[in-house]
Image (cartoon, rainbow, N blue to C red; front, side, top):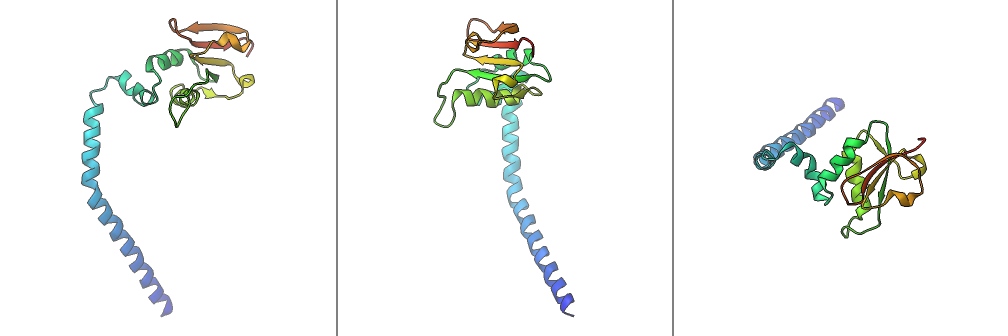
Length: 154
């Protein structure tokens, strides 16, 4: 008899939790659906490039530079991000922002923080010539210091 009472109590607790969860869904669903519909209307107007660049634009990293990098990075590359030290905001440095955007944007390449482990250097407002490495090939995006450099022998 004791087991029957315990089982009834457990069923009652589970039922009460389920009702609270259902009430929560019913009360918040309309607001969530309106919010999603509003966001969809805003982003639906974006071009494919605008959608690709939306997250990185928030970091103030130009999407066209990331496109340049992505066109030259291949699967299996181990990328070292060379960024001159600079502040970006009170929460993040420029180097942190570039590495964050690059890890997302340059997949399936892998970031390495050790230059000795890298086979590719991605330079953002920095001169890869200062690293003292020999490169198999190197490409620059325009006149600014944006480079992709494949390290010779790696």
